[in-house]
Every structure is written in structure tokens, then in C-alpha cells.
Length: 306
Length: 278
Image (tube, each protein chain N blue to C red):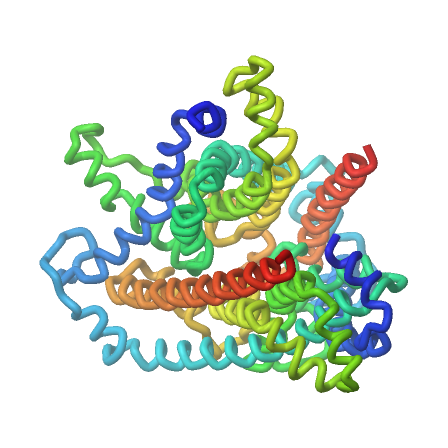
């Protein structure tokens, strides 16, 4: 809005004539070191693998074939559907979705509560939520691992309280990965929802109350629809990094709790060493994210028109 | 007023907020507490001690941590300076450049490093560097960090610039200031809170990065996060908790500073708009 206004006012803009020169460094840096690499990754996913990492420059569909079909150990059996990777994808999508819902359930009331404080207290609450957002994700994940391990502080506390008689096995389970994702990306939900609720005009709630709407009806029928862009933004900010997460499954889950991120990492850093397959998996992940973003962009433009 | 607050407030939302903060802080507080544990064991509390902090600075692994810390800080500083400069120019071009064909595309390119999942960026960068034959190490880490820090610097700077009315530049132009003078003496001082916030964000994003660095660091070069990850793979030792606590304090310090810079900037903006209104 402001930008458009500026454009109109700034008829004699001093910087308009050098616009291209100003933008060129950023275009070049991101273009050469990210856009070109992503296209190269697409190319690599159609090449033949070299056994100790790297590729042979020969066209091949082997990477995508390996993702979908199982052709036996020597590749000469009739193809059957290979469920391993599809299962990893489905589980990752499910875990990212559950993490998003959990973050929304706890994040929305928090954001709403902070946005309805008076401005001085609001800054303090907001600061408290922001600090963990900027603390190193690796350190946060390691801290969670320390907290929930078999003879860790959480189990000791629960034993001392008499809530359990034996230490719970939390580490290396799907539950731990789920908890890790929820914990990692919770601030990503609170901040955009807060930004939306802060702009919400509470006279709308009052008008609804005057029309005898109950409190929870107002929340559902008035507040939610108005702050929906913030909620959607928060969901995207939690869902996308959860889907490609590496640290939570690697540190909190065991070998059984593979997610897409761990599968990709294994192809480049681990023992598998299959670059075309890793590139193909990364490509599939990127396509899913792009589809999600495009659906979001389309919905947004539709609400703006309507 | 009473009716107003009845509509605004919901029972249970305070509890949800406290639960949220508890979940966010509990693991960090526990690790901080145990970093002062005198005992060698990470399960038994043996009294208060600073021995693990001593261990971080002079212990057997201290040389490794020191070189990792040096790499982290120098890379973060260089990456933040470069990305903030590039992002400031880009913000001027985007916000003050008027409408042009492909503006939306340009915005998409500028924010691409945030949109693409980090692990995909890591894979693409590794493939690119190996295809062009670049030796993996300090230089490759720095290039990758500059790229993904650009949007984090760009967004606060562009937001700040959008809030600055173009009258200031127009007035300077009427007084025959050239483009360089307008930027140095008029726009840059007004943009400074945004530029500083962008710089601090870029610095901390670079300092914290693990996934991309882990892919492209090559062998031998470590940053603090990759060194900590390597150590944690062999079990969480008390000196790692001490090191984590130190890093945690550095991050908190940076957030506090950028918060203060931001609120100063906001106050400035508010007083200006107040003046305009009167």
C-alpha cells in the first residue's frame, strides 16, 4: 500500500533511473548461487550415479525409478511398488501436519493473548516469545534431547512426583520427533498470528456482542475469518520447515524415524552416496512446497478479488 | 469498558500463553542449570561449579572449539556485511524504483532463499560447487551464507524504507543534492534502524546455520554448530552444555539489541508521523 503510494508521489524519483544497477547485485548473487544450482539439481536427478558420490553424465531415470519401483537386488525382477520412500514421504507429511495443528492450538491463544495486552506489557510478552525464536535450533534440539532422555530430568521429575513408576522411553520414538518439530517451530506460528490479531479491529467483536453472539461464536465467526491470513502464514512457516526437517528426526528419532530430510542427507553425507537419488528426492520435496505455496497464492488473490 | 474487556478476553488464553512459554524455555533452562553441575556425570547433581566453562576455554577440545568459533564469527561478520549491502541496494531499487516489468519476479527471486526448504538449498549448493570444481571450505561456506542471508536483511530494510515518505528526497533534490548526497545524508540516516535490524538478523542467521554449512563445509573446516553437532553425536557431555549456554547468551544478547534498535526506530517513526499530523 505504502509502496504504491510512494511510487505515485515519487514522480521525480532520484533512484528510478539506477533501479537496474541497484537490483543487479542481488539478482546475480541469488541467480548464480541458488537459481542455477536448483536447475542443476534437476539435471543431476536425471543422471547416472557414481558409486562413491558424484555422477556420471549419462541420462537416466534410475533415481525416480528407484523412488517408485522395487526391481529386486540385481534389478532384473519384475517391478513392484517400492513402499519404503513413499512411506517416508507420507509419514513426513503427516508429522509436519500434526506439528502445524499442535502449533496452531497452542500458538493462536498465545498470540491473541499477547495482542490484547496494553502496549507496554505486550512488548515484554513478545520479547519472551522472540528470544527462543532466535536461539540456535541445534542447541534447542539438543536441549530437548537432554530433557527427555531415559534417565533425564523429565523422567526424574515424573518419578519423584510418583506420576510414573518406571522411566518412560521417549527418545528415539515418533513421539519425540513430533515433540521436537512442535517445539522447534512453535514461535514461527505465534509471531505471524500475533501480527494479524494486533491489527484486528475489536469493534467488530463488540458489534457481534451487541447482536447477542456468544464469546466463542465471535471467535469462530468474526475473529478467525479476519485474522485468517496470519493463521495461514503461520501454518506455512511451520509446515514447510517441518517437512524438510533434519535435526529433530536425526537427534530425537532413531534409525526407524526417518523423515525426508534424513533421507536426503544420507545420500550426500551418509553411507548411501547416491547423488542422483538425493537430487530427485530434494526435487520432489521442492515441488510439493511449490505446489503448497501456489495454492496459497491463488487463494489469497481470490479472497482479494472477492 | 467492562463490556469491552468481556468481548476481548477469553478464559484459558493466559494458561495457554504460560504453557507456551514453559515449553519454549524449560529445555533451555534445564541445560543452562546442568552446565553449572560440578559432577562428571550428567545425571547426578554434584553442586555448583564453573569447571565446564573452564573446560570449554582451556580443556582438551578447546583448540577445536576456538577455531570453530573464529570461523563462525568471521563468516557471520563478512556474510552480514555483504548481504546487508546487497540488500540495501535491492531495497532502494524495489521500493524507490517505481513500477517495472518483472517486479513480482524480482521479489520472488529476492525471497527465494526463505521459500526453498533449507535442505534443498543445501543439496543444490553442494551439487553446484562440485560441478564448477570449487574447493569446499571457508570460501564455499561464506558464499552460501551471503546468499541465504540476503532476504533476512532485505525484508526489514524494505519495510523501513516503505515507511519513509518520499518528501525528504524530493526536498533534498529541490536543494540540488545529487543521488549520492541524498542517499548518504537523507535516506541512509532515516533507514538506519532497518539496516541495523537487517544486519543483526543476517549475522545471527549465519552464526546459527547448521544444515547448509554441514553439507558444504568440506572436511577440516568447522563452524560452532557443526562442531557441537559432531560432539553431540558421541553423547551430550557437560562441556557441550556450557558451550551451548554461552551461545544461547550471545543469541539472547543480539535479540535484545535488535529489539532495542527496532523500538527506537518505531518511536522515531511515530514522533515523525505525529508531527505531520499536527
